[in-house]
Length: 109
Image (cartoon, rainbow, N blue to C red):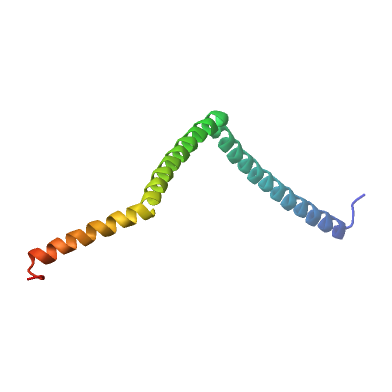
């Protein structure tokens, strides 16, 4: 017993749609697999992550210690420059040097 030709056409259309959807699923699956492989490569490339973190922590500690030493030295120098005795001494030295220059230059004849 043969089916109606319109039924065969409908079945052929349905099979074609199913093939297309299957092709899309395979393509999507391949894309997902590629992405997972890329992520896995990055994770394995990190390899010894705890050791890398420990090295970076040592570098950070060394840089912070250096900055603290520099800040301390600059802070000490700034404290001296901003002190009243330093200002008085600098004013006296500049006044004396200015007076000597004025006398040698003939300003006071």
